[in-house]
Image (cartoon, rainbow, N blue to C red):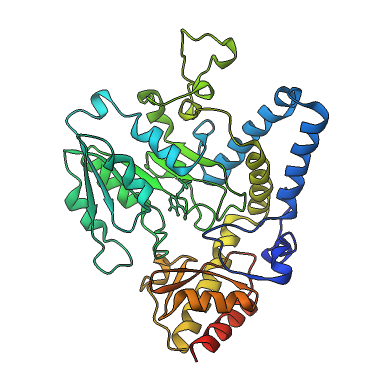
Length: 381
Ligand SMILES: Cc1ncc(COP(=O)(O)O)c(C=O)c1O
């Protein structure tokens, strides 16, 4: 595998040539590499039709699972493909029964988590969803989880990085709290993987969801579900499909034999165009290396924080740099107006209530951060 510097990788992303793109927490930029994988997929569809399934596309699915496992520091066979984070969470929430669930009907999450996480249990009769408040609207104190997670709790379900504020949570501490009470630890890592280095094999986390859409620069239509290998034999999803079956190609409707590995959490045909664009994005992330990505993102985030402070903007972000990630929330009196003003100047960011949201990635530069800050300050004045 060749090594790419963030600066070299930048040339892979056409949007960076004529836009200042600072919205990677919503959608990672599209690379020429991803486009080439997609073109290969389309060409095989043209020339081979369905025979491409056996000769190429099943192999592409396996390659993507292996690459994602490598990137997440997860063991072979511990990652399943899902249609979305919501679908992955649904199969997790429907996989725990028997002794693991006995007498436990509580799920503990936080108000800063993405709503789809809580919705999984809000719709289930008999489940008590506990939504913990954030003391400062930025992060959570692990002690809050430790107090709420008890012998009635089935899942401690929360985010690696809060989409609302970029606050990074401590996975080891969360797993320790969950397991200390006999509960399972489920982490929504959609905003984590790809900007925060991960070694899932060395954590005790039971489930981790993420996907190619955002920090992995692979586009919409797919998600990844990590399941801790020693948990897999204890779990059998009650929503399923033929991709979850080891005997799928027997086409025997009478017997369902689940895969021994995490594929038992899969359902139906994955979105093949995204499997291909995801391979392109993943390849670039692998070549740059997650440590280099994280280092670059830290630099850009700290520059944003400094520059925003120097210009008198308030921030809704963690006080300590080690808890901050590359999602920076700048308080503003007119976020939609500011975002539209920035767009007129070729700068793409987003807004959330009361805030302009900026999310740089490894392919951005300090110059772009200065340009963004100058243009935002120009609108306020
Ligand atoms: C942290 C987080 N979790 C989940 C989701 C939703 O994922 P999906 O649409 O794949 O269900 C998002 C969407 O942006 C998110 O930011």
